[in-house]
Image 1 (tube, rainbow, N blue to C red):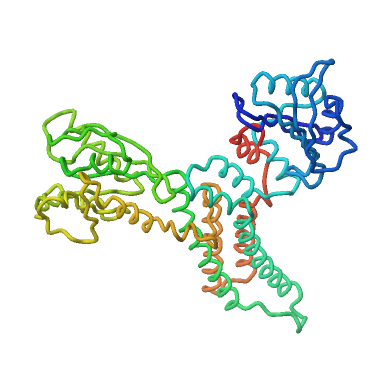
Image 2 (cartoon, one colour):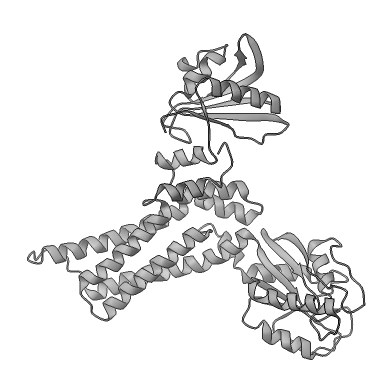
Length: 447
């Protein structure tokens, strides 16, 4: 990290303004001879300066140059940001000049990687940066801000400190048993503290798994027998005529998809072929696809027809989906009710778009959206973090089991140390180059 890197931080396309960012020990000295109006080396840090980029006596562009001196910068290195007019030609020309004068083109995510390696942010905060850039919904934004602000990191640090305190006391007890004034670490104390940590971690994992689903979009399958109004409900939720709607059974023969933001969360909606016995080869394939989607779905919207008695197909689907997260929708409330099924249903009229908001409210309840949005909620939202939390839980459960079975205390200590290491992996206290290269390669250039 001894060289100086450069990249465009805004989109490489026509716009009002573009920003070219440099970071490194030579950032100021590289830009200084190109900026004719002022001597950047003599300017105060965190100032914005008007002038021109000039090369070989030719004005390249009228610019604003921001100068930020280490260590109070994003990377903790000297940082220069050149605000140019948003011309692709201008951006390319200035970067070309900077490369000829000693810069190296930054790799994807290299600015954030330097911020991590220089100790400004930890690994969860680094991931929060990318999550914030990619956020599409309000809840994604809030979860990313929590990561970026260090909220999740603080929780991990607190848990690691508790484990360090417990491990240290165990080691002192083992190494210096003759000292009477040393606090004796009892099996009961280990059990109590480990149980407290397990309760905290299990709650976090539960919320985090919902948070991960919400972040990626909830795979939502609309299921039901033919002509119950599945496609009408899809259209009502999307507020557009995405699926063909007719009174002819079996109209939907293949999967129809669409996305919508509901209550700040993204739903990936899938309308399926109506489930019934059919001799039509094409329709049978669609029905098989419908049933195969049940296992991989994260939410089922099971639609029943309120104007008809419960059928064999309805009963089959109610049984088939009983262990899934689901919302049972009784459609056609505008018609005479002949369906006696009333277990926790939402009554709607997709035709008149009545009851659609109640479906959205039920979705928010099922996925604990309010709890996740709570400013005090701590959420981890990617596979790496959640799998490490689960590994931590396994190690703590082993420690708890060892304490309950009165195993040697030094054996219990091994499990506690493993839990401490797994928590360290989450925030990047332990890392390898392959992990960092993989993680930061997903970032955009200039960040």
